[in-house]
Image 1 (tube, rainbow, N blue to C red):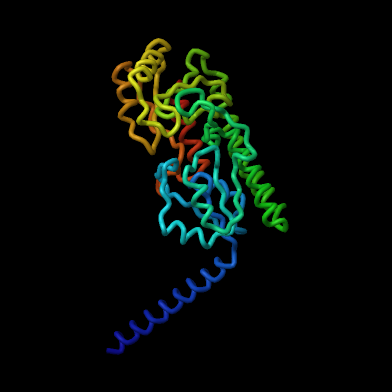
Image 2: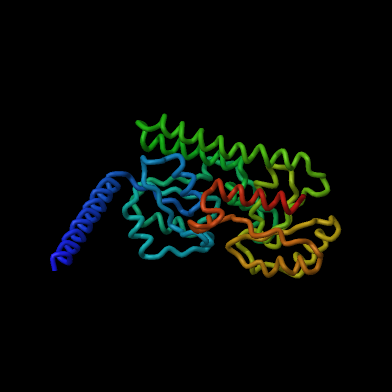
Amino acid sequence: MKKNFLFLFLSFLICLTITSCKRTSYKKESNKEVILASFTVLADIIENVAKDDFIVRSITKPGIEVHGYQPTPSDLIKASKASVFIDNGFGFELWAEKFVSNLKVKRVTISDRLDPIFISEDFYKGKPNPHAWISPKRGMIYVDIIVDSLSEIKPSKAESFKNNGQIYKNKIAQLDKDFSLFINNLEKNNRYLVTCEGAFSYLTNDYGLKEAYLWPVNAESQITPKRMARTISLVKNKNIPSVFCESTVNNESQMIVVSETGANYGGDLFVDSLSKDNGSANTYLKMLQKNLTLIKKGLN
């Protein structure tokens, strides 16, 4: 009986301690401003600059396709606690304008300070390709933009944001250096990147690759027999060793290219979203590393 009483009493004390810690932690957290990012990749970049000076959350979850995302009532509740909303722009978040119109937040749009690469075909011709973060060289520009933006919001921490940003950029720069070296040693005839979506224009432009794809941007339904035949012909004629798809779309169409050409399937590249916490691309740095490793292996 005494043992049972002692067990219950100790359990009560533990629960009381845990509850107290949770309340203290929540109270401490609630004193920080909340930055809401439009997607997981951007949220991770912001976190690496902001560190402990802001709470950073993402509207979309890992593994979600962002272009056509439809915000939910719970997203609006989450957003109501934010003071800053940061999105990519270039038409990437089709839902952002309406979403932000319901909020009282400071808005930062990364693309306002980026030079775009324009899409060259179909319905999207002349519109900016939104996927600039796919290239490490542009990723470092994202970091600079975020450093400047956070410094404007919280000037007293500007030096801290600058230091955090430089440390982070140094890590991205190492990936940039390694991939540049690989491309420089790759035969020019092998410098083709064939993917499902035309989301790699910044990467191919920055590193001297030629890009081919089955559909432009967020237009899987626009695969035509002509485009499929063109892609198959290119892979055959140029003897391209591997083709790729993306983690948030179906690779069925690209597998037709594989079966018709004998090319290898190089794997799923990450574009719009990080992987879940236990995945191989659960941070921006890991996402870049994963993509570049797959590309190097596929083209070698």
